[in-house]
Image (cartoon, rainbow, N blue to C red):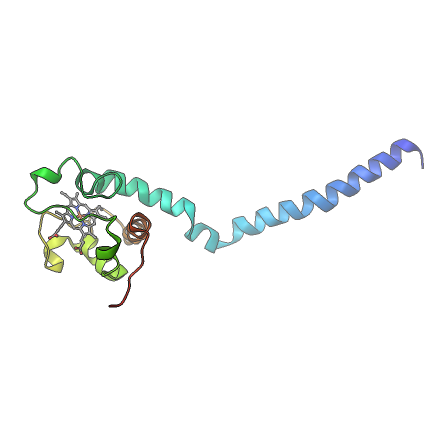
Length: 140
Ligand code: HEC
């Protein structure tokens, strides 16, 4: 074998051991539905939904100080208050977002969203609220 074909053989060998597994891993990632259903991408979508539908009352960072807050009869919930937020289950949050304040015994200033957001989007928002409070439900 000449130098040239040795070099080509080595190159071919390197491509095989590095690139082929990398391509496989990429494809496996892409085919795995769990990778789509969770993680950063979903949180980014939920953040978009939050900015469009919630931030004008609850504030862009969830502190309850949105532009409309002062015009409401009840202050919007501060989603960064981990003590309060951890007293609520994910289901409580889902129901409040979906059915609105009046449906869960709270002020009707909190509007229902079941007709404008899908269940998937509302589940995403619950996750996003958990991200804002950096908390989970804690049983008392
Ligand atoms: C028009 C203003 C307004 C908009 C828009 C709004 N909210 Fe609210 N929200 C409120 C107010 C006011 C309350 C407080 C109700 C109370 O304490 O009686 C509230 C309460 C809540 C609660 C209930 C917390 C608890 O005490 O159980 C959740 C969860 C919530 N909002 C999430 C959202 C999300 C998510 C969105 C966007 C999809 C949103 N809100 C949009 C005004 C708003």
